[in-house]
Amino acid sequence: MSEPKPLDAENTLKQSGIHEEWVDNYRTPDNEQFYNMAFDLITESFGSPSGATVVDAGCGSCAKSKNLADRGFQVLGTDLSDSALDMARQNLRGTSYENKIELQQQNLTAMTLPDNSVDYLVCWGVLMHIPEVDKAIAELSRIVKTGGYIAISEGNMHSLQARTFRFLKKVLVRERAGVHIVPAGIENWEETDEGRLMTRQVNAQWLIAEFEKHGMKIEKHVAGQFSEMYWMVPTKFLKKSIHIFNHFWFKIIRAPGLSFGNIFIFKKL
Ligand SMILES: C[S@@+](CC[C@H](N)C(=O)[O-])C[C@H]1O[C@@H](n2cnc3c(N)ncnc32)[C@H](O)[C@@H]1O
Image (tube, rainbow, N blue to C red; front, top):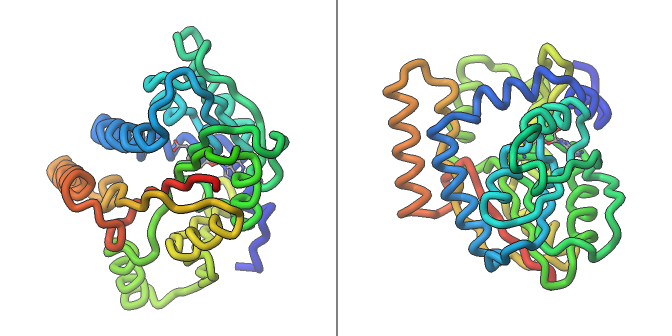
């Protein structure tokens, strides 16, 4: 694979196929149950203000925007990708969400929103696909008001799932092409039918330090889903078992260190 460039990732995300695949893999009833618990936690951390506006940065098909609208927020859903925004529009058309969710095209690395203009911001599973993640973090921190909050969800490079996959790949495939170890985490560039896609498993300590550089203080760092392997396993029984374990880990254990999903809540000082 020739040296990947940030624009390769953006071009891939402009295609519709990649978004359809994400919806198929993640928008399942078991996942909806988890997202409901996760968004209760996020909005409680925000102080659950009714009627406030929240930016869903990298909203995709805007499923998480709906989770936020259901909890009383007005939502501004933004995404880089026209095809994701088209899916989002179709999703909202003719529903009561049309009055609660506005959509806008925005690149997280160059947001057009003014400094200190946003009270609450959610960025779920997005930074992991942005090569110039430091620019995106600077932008998100810039647009949030002093006293405002940012909630982030990312995959953790130190999780049991990530470590097991790395070990298996090393032993079975002996192929490291497309894998880059960087301060932000481990970046994996893969060739998809839509073009090159970058997915990073984050180094949580780097992420926290990077937000702190921009005046954001970490308020909460907890586990999300312990494993996302449910979409890879073949039987319903195995899928269900993973979801039950994820539920237990999220509700009872909460420790993010070994968990694949990590949720971070930052407050601007
Ligand atoms: C894995 S999807 C997650 C979508 C949504 N947050 C969710 O959880 O359902 C990642 C989304 O981030 C968007 N994205 C990636 N890079 C972006 C960028 N630089 N600016 C804005 N959006 C971006 C993609 O187009 C895609 O819709």
